[in-house]
Amino acid sequence: MTNTVLAQISFSSLLPDMFRALDITGVLLNGILGGRLARQKHFDLVGFGVLAVVSALGGGIVRDLMLNNAPPVALTDKFYLTMALAGALVAGLWKFDGKWSRRTLLLFDGLVLGIWAGTGTQKALSLGFDVIPSILMGVITAIGGGMIRDIAAGNVPMVFGGSSLYAIPAILAASADAAFYKLGYPMTGLVAAILVGSILTVLASWRRWVLPETHEWTISMTHQQWKAAQRARQLARGEYPDAKTKKLWKNKFSTGETEKDSDNGDSGTTLEK
Image (cartoon, rainbow, N blue to C red):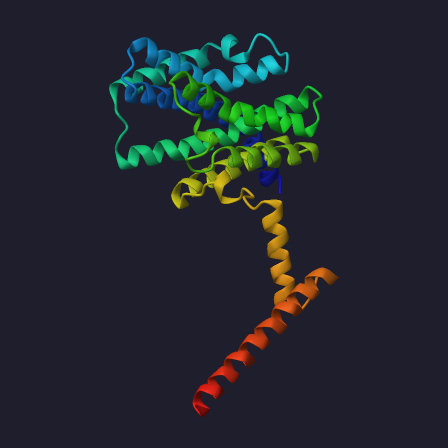
């Protein structure tokens, strides 16, 4: 029993260090992603550095400014800026175009998305913000840097569509973290955020999950077309929406019967002749 309790205490004491390591790793990874985009755009060294820094630190800086938590931690902790620039250097030396390198980046990207969504959410909750604004801060922390990176490179942000789900895993990861935080289990919330964010990000990329575009669910039927469709459906069931429609329909039916009888009569006369 004593050994079990000691093991739990030891594991709990290691969690902050694990989260810190993942956080720093995430800065390096997003620096690499920014550098990869700079390589694709054929930018120079300045472009590599700028895209790496905004990709790795942009979300956290925007979050801290919105929370009025100045100066941003990304500028006060020397490891953040150093690792972001290191990511730019790594992306400048290697292309990361191989299958396994892309898969590795995707896996770590999911892990980082989860931990950044969780840390951003908990930071807002610890400052007294409500759950919904805190979840928003978590999402901004997770995807804000990537959005700024894409805009700076002249691209439409990937989270706006055309790629696998990215914002949705961040929202769900931040929500899971907020739920556990409110229950009094902040460390469990961070673990849940990492699991939700990484699993959903990898599955979305593997299964190519995307949100429907507007043309797939936009209502294109006019009001008159809708009324005509409703009237046709009622007539098909033998129902009449009003007396006028009933009269017109019956007159049309009666006329059709008369024309049919008239045709039969003409046919009979022709045969007699």
